Length: 310
Figure 1 (cartoon, rainbow, N blue to C red):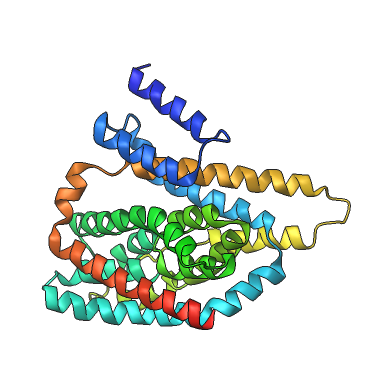
Figure 2 (cartoon, rainbow, N blue to C red):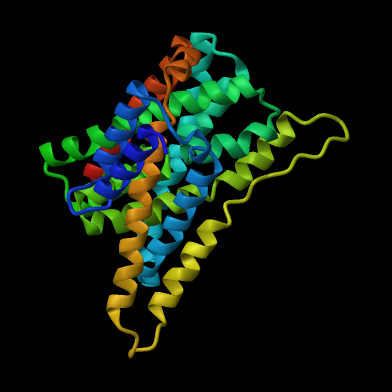
């Protein structure tokens, strides 16, 4: 085993210790990626995605269905405004910056719904090229890394409650991993609200992918739409927790939730490791400017709305 791989395992063990945290996981992943490189690049694709989805499902065992319903109900208006607002603003800003049409669509949908997952689902629907997918994913990834550090600091500086912060992070941060990472740093109530509202937002992937597939359709072609099935498993896990027999020890569910949080931490470490200099160079200034301006507008508007109405 090379020393780079040995260091990888040492860092994972450290991050899973009481001294580790989601923010530290992302930071260490970034540092390792830019210094010695990623010793396990094969883990940054589907393995990281499946680990994230599994962790989301396991987190459901720590939630009550009534709380899931309440959080989803309270966040639905914000979600609708963010989805349609981001798509419209993204189209207008993309026109001003003269960003290629498919990249504009991918960055806008990634901002509107759930970052990389939305881009991965929308890409095949609009027949995006590999480079267009890479540029869009790189843009969203960099912004998510920034959000993980910035959002908790902003929330604490203006005195947001945990419920307010959870709602804000769920509607203003793109990727589920960064939403969970930022909200878990803020507190358990923030994490519960953020996860529930974020997953409700992610449900927009399917209808939006179908609509865009129709817009970009070719005669006689068939496009496979990715359905985020793990969201329904999350609800099923919450149902098991809600209707579990009274004799079921709470420590069992606590252990499962702790396992989910460990999975999130490792996921963020793998995400940090996947960022490379080549990715940053490939992004270019126009797509990155599009994503940044769009994200700042959405995050600022969402912050005002949550403080005003949340």
